[in-house]
Amino acid sequence: MRSVLLAWLGRTDLECSSRKKEALGPIATAVVAESFREIILLSNYSEEENRTFEKWLQQYSATQIRIVPRKLPNEKVIDHEAVYEQAVPVIEEALKRHGYDVPLTYHLSPGTPAMAHIWVLLGKSTYPARLIQTTRDQEGFQEANIPFNIATDFRAVLRHGDQRLLHLLQGSIPDSLEASKIIHDCIEMKEALALAARAAPREFPALILGESGTGKELVARLIHSSSDRASHPFVCVNSGAIPSSLLDSQLFGHKRGSFTGAERDALGFFHEVKGGTLFLDEIGELSGDAQVRLLRVLQEREFYRLGSTRPEKTSARIIAATNRDLLSEVATGKFRADLFYRLAFAVIQLPPLRERGAKDIDLLADHFLGELNEELRKGAAPGAVEKSLSNKARNLLRAHDWPGNVRELQTTLARSSLFSLENKVTESDVRRSILEFPQNLHDIASRQLGPGFCLPEIVKEFERLYIRKALSRAKTQKEASELLGLNSSQALKYRIDSVGI
Image 1 (cartoon, rainbow, N blue to C red):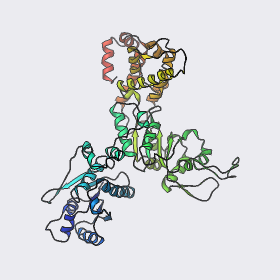
Image 2 (cartoon, helix red, strand yellow):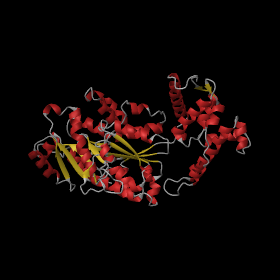
Image 3 (cartoon, helix red, strand yellow):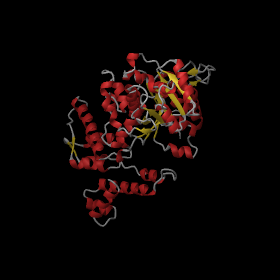
Image 4 (cartoon, helix red, strand yellow):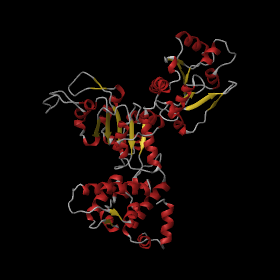
């Protein structure tokens, strides 16, 4: 797919177009060397100079050229924050026009150093793009290979007090109460939260995927609190809990007398959220009719209250979440493809706890046990003693498969603390607290054939499940190997290593 070229119009480009210099200039050099989907030039120059340059550049390319006036007073041309504020709306408008999956190219050579710096910051964080620059002889251009963490080199160029903007440009989450609730260390969670940070300042919908208990609502709240909508409401709706017959009334409200029992006017969730964020949890549970109605709201940005003929506008941002495999459901027709693509501008996949590693389990266990101890200190359970985990209990937590993920770990520790009569939560306390769910085997065996299906990985999942069951029930590896029908504990150790436990 051809990319959209964005650049600031530079003085050198104008001089080349007026024949003051016998060269093409940075912009024309790139245009001659490569075909673009559209050429968007931000210009701080006069309307006449813009027209002259556009007419001259058209002789080198049949691509549509769009010159966007962006007025910067002379003292602001080197102001990084002012340049940033001028550039972002142009990028957003281009993405809305071409689609958010269109590739972008930023030209670093035209304009001032501040303009180049902001292209780098944006291209390596919030608005990813390929970066190009013109060679000195201006006979061609080359890609600018810049490491991702280059954003940290520009701390001094942003306004000292605007740390939030700096965080967003770097794709990192500002410190907040919501961020502190997401306990993690593994790289998979770091990558998911970095994507959430890049999605936060954008206005398009986001789709959070993950098994039940992985923290989808926490991430949705984090996106909301890190966006410009943080001061507006965050409304959480369990889509699967609303009967289809009541969905319109719950989401959009109704007028008095619009149906039996509608004794007064009522406002729906879209009214309640106002300029905030509407979090639609379990979006995969929506009926076909409900999907059609939600799609219309996303497309038209308006809705009708039941019993009303007057459309009402909404500026709500939609964040959706599901534990279902939506791609498979789109393929089988259970979920509308057009709604999926409307929702899936930013897709954030949260890993299950079993794939996050022992360190994350330890961090979460210590955090939840700390919360339980804090309740004890406040006198919530008179006579109880504060608890810590024994090494064997910790190892058992690490070995468990956690089908209910973080939520299951939290409730298991609460039960273990309740069962424990001493100040140590023992292996026996944890073993009694873990609930086994036989349907896990069915979940693995019911995976749909198609894109993403991998038979060797499915076999490994079966092995991991049974090995963890055996480890949780046995007191020694020798006993666990006997439960699994293996010849020795060495054979069990080999299988543990091979499946990544």
